[in-house]
Amino acid sequence: MSHAIAPSVTSQPLRFSRCLPLLSLLCVSISNYSMADGSVVDKIYHPYVDALEQELEFRAIHQDDQPEAEDNLQLYRFGYGRAFGDSWFGEVYLIGKKSDETGFQLEAYELEAKWQITEQGEYWADWGLLMELEKESHENIWEFSTGILVEKEWGQWSGTANLVVTQEWGSDIKDEIESSAGLQMRYRLSRWLEPALEFYTGQDTRAIGPALMGNIKTGIRKSLHWETGIIFGIDEDSPNMTLRGLIEYEF
Amino acid sequence: MMVLGLGLVLFGHYSVAGTPVIEIEIKDHLFFPATIEIPANTKVKLLVINRDLTAEEFESYELNREKVISGNRKAVIFIGPLPPGEYPFFGEFYPKTAQGKVVVIDQ
Image (cartoon, rainbow over all chains, first blue to last red; front, side):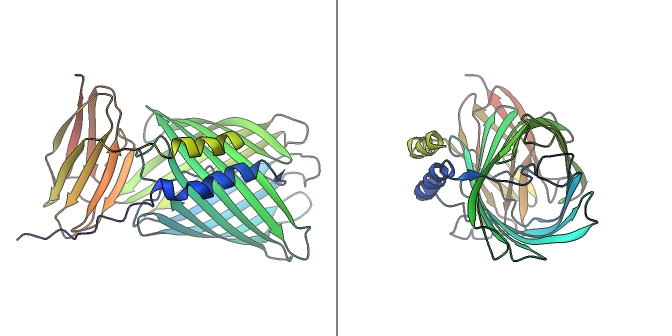
């Protein structure tokens, strides 16, 4: 039995040229605002969406002493995400916090959307856009972040940059716009183990350190993705050391 | 950042016109052809046509590509430029049957 092929090609990410004005404006705008405060060491996002994928995610960050911050600050994110079509991925998070001053408490809720703008390998680099809306659970503080995700492949090496602008507002915070960036250089050694070097910068943080990550297949269209890293501050304002870990069950 | 913004404008009009296109069909959870030969150091556009009713995912760690192709749909996958060698790929939904490889030939 023959099957006619539907005329529409599986919807590809939007053509790159259409997004140029927005991306260029965002890049230029980042240089005009103050750098983000708070912890900026986190996951590095890649500009790709795997259609039909769902995931459960757990992320943890522990940073030691940092001027103007709580000692031994720990942040936890529990998330559920799923793809919408070929180029959008949405995720909801509960964010928990613990430090020497406070016990574990629910800190915030977050909605996140990732848009794969270009097809992987089509252009000089691959591009995506990240949008996050966060609301503090006990205070009237809102955050909206927009980030450019860009990845470039050199053989078995992949370089990724996340350039993020965040608007904060609400009655419990002074309204401001901040920026932050995360860079990762990753060597695709094997599916199970990939070493990387990561750099993060924000208002109170400039930090660099090694990371390891990998994937473990657990069945057809089922896998565990893990990441861990030790990120060291490189100036007086930064935490001396931040540990980060992530585990995702993708199905 | 301003440099990066300018770079976006400069590089954004890079065209992929002229990229060689190779068609691959998925039928009965098999790839046809299962072996594809492409020239070294050349970007190639794979047009993957899924003639099965069920979805399949073209996956290759060696090519650094993952792409779901819904049943009775097509999808485009760009690979390369690559050095000479063999790069296996498989169908994530039916990995026992859907197997193939890209052979990159030095010309």
